[in-house]
Image 1 (cartoon, rainbow over the protein chains, first blue to last red):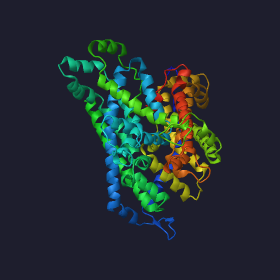
Image 2: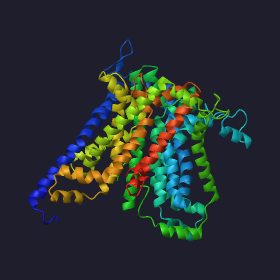
Image 3: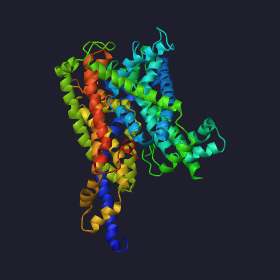
Image 4: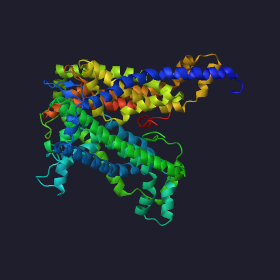
Length: 297
Length: 293
């Protein structure tokens, strides 16, 4: 067909096509640039801004907001947020792997249904789910009652208002972001690889660590990033599950914009959060690039 | 290769039949794995079950069930503030859905087909909301509105939600568009259609199931969204999520159980619908809509 087409017409059509496609892209791109990119720039600008006597933000160049970040009160919160987020990633991986593995390898004809049964409620209202989870983990809730019944907890054990509660909230909130990529990776895994490992006298554990895990490493890496991003910026879990000693960087940001009314400091904290996440993303991208380069060789 | 590689859940190249028979010979289901998975499902649904159960409680307690009653649902219907919030949430979701589906679908078409430098720049901009945590987008949108002197209201929530949702629509539709054969469009043009006509009459109908599915999904996501709405909403009426947030921060309010149950039921129904729309059109269904690529 292409051969029959007159050359001139093809060329005209190609250029004409690009024009149409550009016009199609334009509204969305302009919209996003206008709202999103501009607003992110505004955050950066305001991070070095000042406030007037009434507390209204003013543009300017003043590093007091940025310098305040070095205050131990803030570095402690940042360190705690990082700790919670990393712990959440680890717990999510530990929970999601066996679940995704079981469904992908043993789910049979029910596996699509099972994955849907995980994914669908996770996209339902986050607040209501977290609220229900805080009821479940409360002192009279079913989890602590069950733990007390089997002797793993006594009357004084608490989950709410502790760091464990906050991490439990974050895990409940975001574990699905680990399950989806892991499930996708495990479903594509060629089971004969596992069998080959067994045939070569690898026990189940050795086969898992030398065959299955490396083959699904990219799914796990994607899951870790997808969990880390929202966990690091969350402020609902720390509010519902934690107490004043468990606040995260998201709570600080919220406080600076709503209660404290210190916008430059709030903006500086937001930029700091962005920076941490960008470092995480960058590490992930470098890792996958390397993996892909190795795979190509 | 894309940024966050979420592979399609229905990968075509898996040797299903062979694995099943061979596995049947070599392994049985390990009990530990099944137990962990069962426990996971139990904990996943327990909070939802608790909220639902206690929404029908006749007592004002979250631990003691006093008997079945519709008391809290009645309280919700008679609560003018909550009802006006529900209305606001519905309006916001509807507007955000329409706006982002139109902008996002056009963007996706352009991104797949356009090979210019502007195209790759647009592709990068599109990714920004996906890698920015919601609290950052929330803060940024609020500052932008306040910066240009716009009072926060339902309208500002709509604008912010559109901005955030465009990327989701684009990600969902892009893989579908890439799977279409561009030669079909070329054929339409050889038969005398203009480029626009080819897009409108050939490409869009083929995309209809995916567009509908993404619309339903965005409606549910926006309706349930809390963080962005929290930062960009005005005082009255506030979206339902924001109301729920203020309510649960200040202790137990059984009405919230009723509202929460209704919201969970609504969004679970919508998301399930989004997953199965492609099936209604006789295509291979489902889950890949959530993973995009």
